[in-house]
Length: 143
View 1 (cartoon, helix red, strand yellow):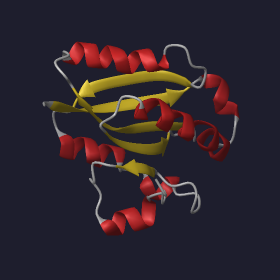
View 2 (cartoon, rainbow, N blue to C red; view 1 turned 90 degrees about the vertical axis):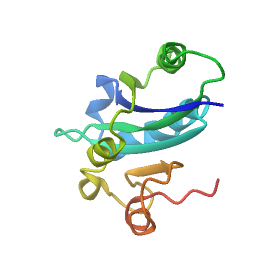
View 3 (cartoon, one colour; view 1 turned 135 degrees about the vertical axis):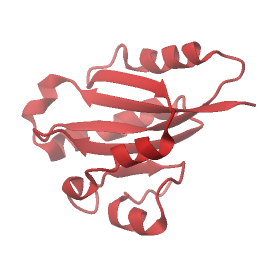
View 4 (cartoon, rainbow, N blue to C red; view 1 turned 180 degrees about the vertical axis):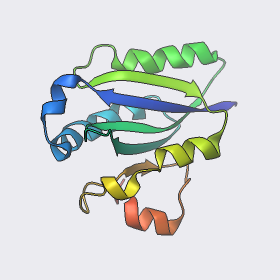
């Protein structure tokens, strides 16, 4: 069974930018986790700020292709976001340079760390971060 890793970016709808960063994060990450978990064999989900402190998300998602083309898989990803009200720009592409992508999505960890419940590493099922990085920047989930 073949699988492919994809890089993704998800922004919030501009109407949410008027909220504080903590409120943007609290109001969106559980819904994003729920949506992406519908398709993911494995999921890594990272939160980040824009320069204006608007929250957006990056990550890695692994699908099991089950005979579907990459185009079909990408369409299913975009369809998840078509009728929802929280998220704006959505992009997904096959990963060509995973170390480069991991470096890119990790660049602002220190600026994002609010408190014990709001950390940049929301999920790391691909285990791209070592134990020390997870201890400093990951949310501890029971599931």
